[in-house]
Structure formats: C-alpha cells, structure tokens
Image 1 (cartoon, rainbow, N blue to C red):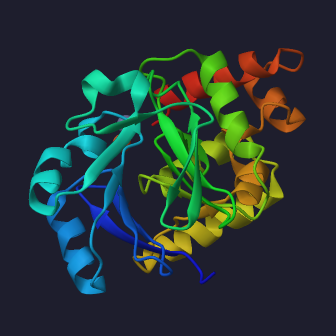
Image 2 (image 1 turned 180 degrees about the vertical axis):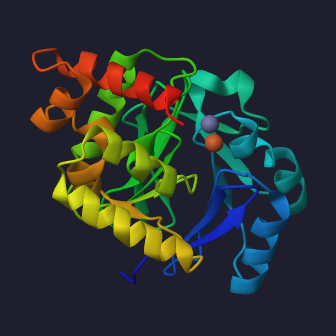
Length: 257
Ligand code: ZN
Ligand code: FE
C-alpha cells in the first residue's frame, strides 16, 4: 500500500482546507468546504478527481461550500447523521463508531460533541492520521457553543487515546494565540515553553503549525491536561475533578485577551 497523501492549503481568514488522496485507487476526499476556489485549484494542481466531502460539522466555515462544490464536481457529501438537517447537500449520514473506506483506506467516524452537538472527526487508523475539525486545535480546543464541558472532555479523550504518533489535522491556524494562553495557565511546563518558541519561529516564517500529533498535544495542550498539578495549581483547583478543571480552563480561555 502506498502512503496516503494529504494536501493542506489556507482558506478564508484562518481556516485550512484539506484534500486526502489514496494513490492506490485514486479516491479523493475534501475535508470540509471552507472555500470552493482553493479546493478546486488544489484538485486541479494535483490532477485529482473529487469523490467525496467529509464534513466535520455544520458551521459555515466548514460546510458553506458544500452545495457549490457538489454542483461543480458531482462529489458526494458525507457528514454527521445527527446533524443531517444542518449539513447542506448531505448524501450519507454517519455516526459514532461507523467504519467505511476511502478507496482502500479505512476511515472510522467518532462523534465528538461539544463545539456543536453533531461534530464528528475522521480517523484513518492504519495511516495514523485524523481530521479533527474544530474539536481539538494545536494547544487548544473548540469553543463550547452547543455542548457541556463533560461532553467536550469526553470527546477530547477519544482523540488522546489514539497512538502517540497520530497526526492531527485541525481546521484552524490558532496555534500562536493558543500557546500564549497555555503558557498563562501552565508556565512551568518545559515542553510547552519549547513548543511555543518553535511555533513563534514557524509563524515568523509564515509556515503552518498544523498538523500536530497526539503526543505533542498530550504534552502541551491544557485542554488535555486536566490532571496536571501545575495547571490545577495555577487555576486554583488542586482537588477538583478533571471535568471541573477542564471547564475552568475553557472559561478562562474564553475571557483571555
Ligand atoms: Zn466551528
Ligand atoms: Fe471553524
């Protein structure tokens, strides 16, 4: 089996668009549809034919290009069954634990409610990659628009349980501001300090900080680190539950300037 190919390109103000391609069969999917033109340009540049869109959630910067892309390419749209009414042009609804194939590649769907009720992520377990939408960001996580802290904590836990080397493609370039917040709540985390410096260097060169990995996130993402005694101490919850620590951390981030 040849190596799976992922193309990543900026869309809108701070989104990333992604194409994932199985060279053995030619099967190609776009992850979300933030903007149609960059997706079509990338397909053209690679000489790939779009078969599918995999939607993570219904927000406009993720599903706003669905109908136009479907009309212009004839692709089929896969997305969360739970949110069928809010995903434009949905052809195939998928739910938690469901497995399907993109060409020869296994894809497993995980429901990750929190940012929205119906959010799903797409894990390619044999290729050690995943598209996590607005559930997890590098050193951050999505805002809780429609879910509870307990739901989001459980959703992030599913991602953290994958193998360390799994590459995580998140949908926004928020890393630099996430790093500033992370340092404010866990200033003693040496891995975090090193990473924040590396991120500053990459951004100064105009380079992306995505993808990240499960290992990096477990070491530096405060939203996966509710058990960290340093974090607990900084936010004043030494003996709280993990969900309480997560909820406080998320609330602090919402207010962080
Ligand atoms: Zn969103
Ligand atoms: Fe988004």
